[in-house]
Image (tube, rainbow, N blue to C red; front, side, top):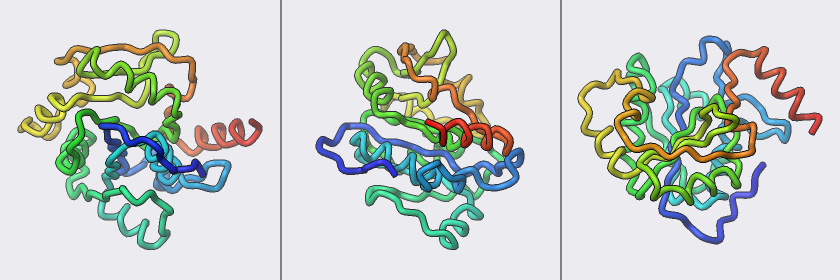
Length: 206
């Protein structure tokens, strides 16, 4: 598991989205294992803690919360759990629920289907935070994850009455800085069990 010892705290938070029903996977993505034995959720949370995020919020469904109670996770001390009781609204509503608990100047938005938040990538994105209201990593012209959003974007999300907004479309309303990175993990998107097996087989050989 990634070391979560932090020397310098940064004025940013991480919002990890876990409330989806993982229908194509057939089981909860956040409990999938990394090669080191940590779950996707444990690994992501410790990567963000190790980067220096002041606050880390995880948005879960009620079923996800029960699974965490049944299978306790080793999570950093700054973790806050938020329950989305209306997963039918989708990702935008989960983001709204999570943002209500955060107070930093910028927030990383991270989907659980990508278990990587590599420190070098986070640093590149964070350093560009004053160059746009939305900061996106790019690899070979393709947009990746996570995205970093400014406090103003957070406030406008919280004030949006349409809970079923498309998050990607919503972000088109803001100035965006694309940051070229050299890390293929920003494009990772694990949605099916076959994709997970392929990912695990590849990673365990590294």
